[in-house]
Image 1 (cartoon, rainbow, N blue to C red):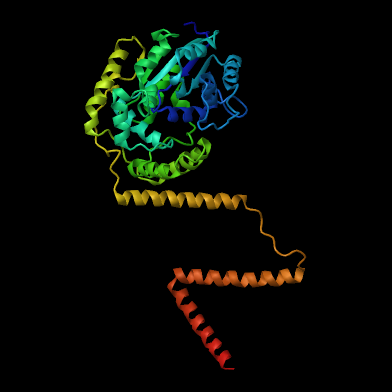
Image 2: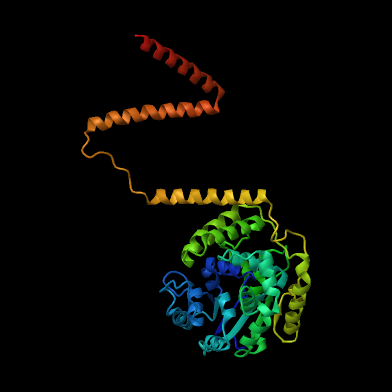
Length: 411
């Protein structure tokens, strides 16, 4: 490739392969990427990558909810990439992995003046399966782990959810075939997600080596990563979904559950690694091996280790065994967090309290004096609760006050 040739890298996912982490790093470091000659579209007043890809594939929010932000976003994104003076542009959106052969062709042909590459982040199927179930629960689904696993495994149920949605997002073989219809194998880069326990920066380093930037120079921390909510937290959300019964629109649900309750649980719950149960290992390993064989035979550039795509049994918690005590603690944590957020947001929006109109300066001064006395009394009793000496002094004052009250009553 000529060093002066413009390049466009389309990071197509897959889902649950560190995409949220990578995208948050890119968003937080747009300027840092730009200084290295990488244009990452987005920011105030510009095209939103997620909406642009939704526009490309025709996706809209479920339940008939209208969202006027989507139409025209793909055209705007393409224009922004074409107009930038950066030699390399990076688009990262995992919904690109859902594109049909025709939609892939549209995406690739949108940049005729550039050398277009696809980047595929791939993770071992065992970890993906558990993570995908948790994500489905965080997206309003009510399947138990047993129901989800059985549905994904059953070859007769591949046309219905949960299998349909899972394999559309995780059938690496089918996704590679769709992109090979428009790109040669040497332009489809596979980046493997490091094994459990590896630093997240290793995935970023691998990705950076493909696109051509120094990850060490991206020094702005991302504001949020897609943390797990744990075994009990997932089950609490699942049961809440059952009680909500689909009554919220997608944006209402996202606001309440994904952006509020899930984040509260992620921050306040001790992280516990969810692992694939032993009884699911054999069929997951068999399906994963078939995809690994396809990658090995495909002559794709691979960054990382192809063996990292092989599922392994590991120590950790089953996804479906929270105790009653853990469920109670997670539910109370969520309730306390939601109560705090509701109260603070209500207070921030609340109109100032107004007293009676037309009161005189003298009346206000007298009222303020009484308020000052009350505040000093409140400070005294608060101190008495914390300090033994102050408590004894307050006790003496209260006994004296009671004696005076009795004398006054006797006349």
